[in-house]
Image (cartoon, rainbow, N blue to C red; front, side, top):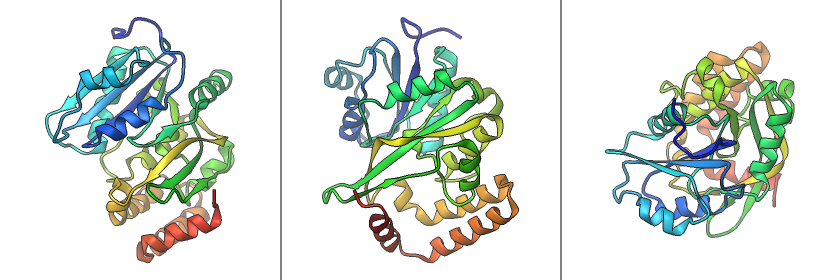
Length: 274
């Protein structure tokens, strides 16, 4: 392995992009951390108008270490993420990998808090935070809250994904045990990947909203909701280890399969208005 960057890094941020260069810029502008201690790896998943490295550098002068990977055609988020992970493994020695998605933004303290926590808790391999979701245009939103400690998180994972993908940071070394994102669970590859991480290390969540996520009708999760819910059922069936909670989790997903997404979103808004 060669260290592509000039100095030892605290972490790498992995962000895929497909036809959303403005959203990519918005997300990367929100990152705040010692510029010499982190790197950003962007995977352009075959965008119709390819992401421009020159435009990224001119728009993001605060990012000293930036690497762009271009896939020749759209391969989907799982392949894009795995391409980025493989590059990080082969070219850096960063101990942690953080995720971020286009249009989602970070609280100023997000990465400071996550790095500090992981440095102090060697047993934790997967770290999330609470997250605020907002509709683009209306500004209506809600805060997604979860348990904080490993035992409660693993129980809750039977009923929902308690780790919001663009809010997580995990230990790079664990990839030797878990492998990369699985292709067997379309649009729920993160749910399965997190279960794998929790099998080899503890999980934790910071009880503060450190990431703001955009709710967009054309987003992957919403436009492929039925496929995602079927994949989540497969994840619970494959990884669930608590009989009663596993049963309840599958029942919940069957209910969600017949519930209109607009109704689900309204219920979330009413439960946790921000």
